Image 1 (cartoon, rainbow, N blue to C red):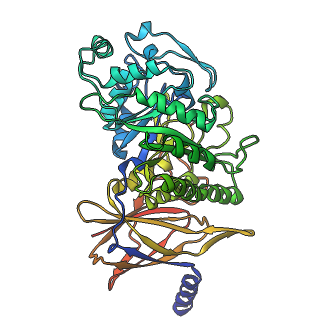
Image 2 (image 1 turned 120 degrees about the vertical axis):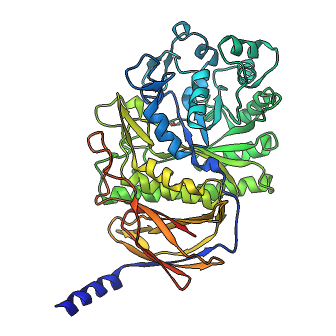
Image 3 (image 1 turned 90 degrees about the horizontal axis):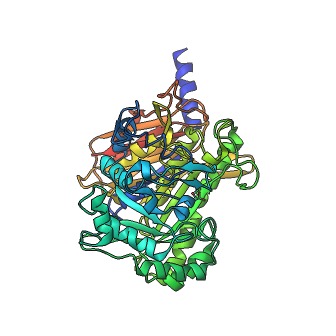
Length: 510
Ligand code: AHR
């Protein structure tokens, strides 16, 4: 009986697909810009109002109007940079409406997102307060589409100048003596679409004009991001690099993952999906690699020294809105599938760290592939949040090349690589290896050769779940959360482990 059981176990193990990996600790690569783990908060749906801002008089515990539970959760992510106020909203946002006493601020219609009335209670001061509370750098998106050069110029003065000047004095009059730091500023958003429907050559000139008046006041140096392409629009990148490559520090790229790949019809449900939709979602997300290569190749032509960073300041899953919710609020649930999407994308960004200087997942709270969902006083952390928290260790570390041979994950006649990996060495010398198993059905054995690394211990955490659709809800907030991983073994300099089906794993080797 015992022999039979052992035999069955052995034959099961023999049937498990296997991946091999060489982690090249001997070939350190680029430093992984912390900003790859950046976030994005737009005045859209309940991202700002309800998700972040509840107001000082709210019964929800808050600090100067910003909810405390959200602050505490975001602090754990070590958010490096926060993009605000949009998105499409940025090109209709007039910053002067969002300063001064709140009860006197004029309202506006948020025409892009549900046509709701925006009361401007969350403005420049509240944004910088949020940045300070969670310890992040500001990435401000300026209005090119419906704003003026003067407006952008004055906003920069208001935020960053300490002179005895009109805008700096207005800031002081509104209660903030010292200038803030604006590290990153985008000159418009999606100028090919909601930001003004411009042609690339026209926008390149507009970028040059607006950018001329974005001043570096003493003590503040701005990294200027030009609006880049929509997905694979390489002609846009070519025109921007040719006409404004010398003036910019970064060029953006927006790319969303839709299970169906179809913007016009149904995008697919966030929660009611089968394996075919799981597969196409991951397949579409992996197209990011092709985009990074295509846009980088054009950038290399104009900027071989890689001075200009590729800033993927909108990415993530985009499903049909939660049934019954306002479709203009882009509210969606987040499952184990989103965790895998996050892991795959973050690996791609890290493995292209020589060009990718920042990314901002869309969006931080209650919108699209969110970190956090809120409902009145309740808050839940999504599987995507957990991946960002687990991968924190890669921020600012030195990327280490990983040579990977992986089995395919096959569905019907199509396939994608089942395993994805990235590695880094942090300032303390610890090596971190993250792995994703995209196959929802089968664990995979991974045998790793550690080149140039003598590790004595390996520890880890894994995020996995029994069903692809598993998610955290207000009723069950901890259904999907990281667990200690003890399945990795070090033996004679080799690391072996079994990567559970549909999982995201982070290991630390010391
Ligand atoms: O993230 C939602 C929207 O998607 C942004 O406002 C816009 O820039 C993009 O089209």
